[in-house]
Length: 255
Ligand SMILES: Nc1ncnc2c1ncn2[C@@H]1O[C@H](COP(=O)(O)OP(=O)(O)OP(=O)(O)O)[C@@H](O)[C@H]1O
Ligand SMILES: [Mg+2]
Image (cartoon, rainbow, N blue to C red; front, side, top):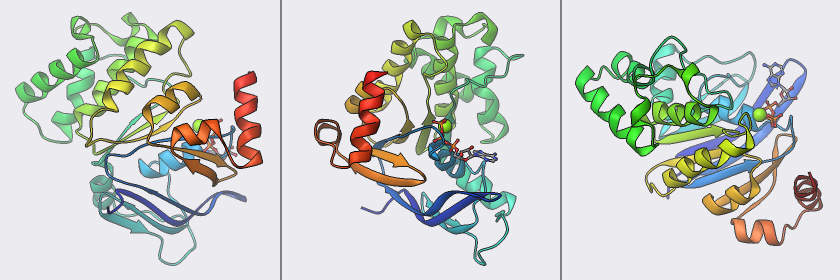
């Protein structure tokens, strides 16, 4: 099947630091992929490039059939705003810090972008928001402000807000690592439910190995801007092949 995400020889630098060096990575429509790996290996950078938050220097990125590239190999490439907008319209992202608008109620947080960006009618945006809040179990909080919610509840709102834009690809960057341990489960539960949506492509960065094992079709171990090893979770966790993967999994499990 044709990939929905395709990095083709993508090179990304921050000044003298090369974070992705001819990076190749493909994800099929509906696939749930987790990225694991040490700090600084470039996991967030991969997601941020997909979200068009970071330009890259070389190679081609294809997202939902739209490709964009840096044809001459020097200088940060900026596709024009319309082009980026079209690419971005296929992607949603949930960050480690929930990034809700503090001065807006939960409901407003969710309907704002569909109205402003998708030009959705207010009633339609609201009824969709209510549906999504039901799904994340927070309908009773719709008129609250983010500061009145727990971290786990804020993160569930952030997930509903991302879904309100009807993305085909949903990116999660360590969605539970800013949460108190007792709040992690409720957020993982929502993401686990989402993973059963066959149409939604999900790319997750997480340190929750048990969760990665449960939800993903494929786990990729990422180190120094490269995928060192990848595979179906059962095999990946029970019989990692690369020494570097074994070392990393060992360090996580002992932590
Ligand atoms: N805006 C930036 N300017 C300069 N360097 C950056 C910038 N963003 C990231 N980097 C560097 O790029 C490398 C990859 O960072 P990235 O955030 O993608 O790592 P990560 O795998 O997500 O790490 P972590 O697990 O700690 O979140 C790091 O060395 C980081 O310091
Ligand atoms: Mg990161």
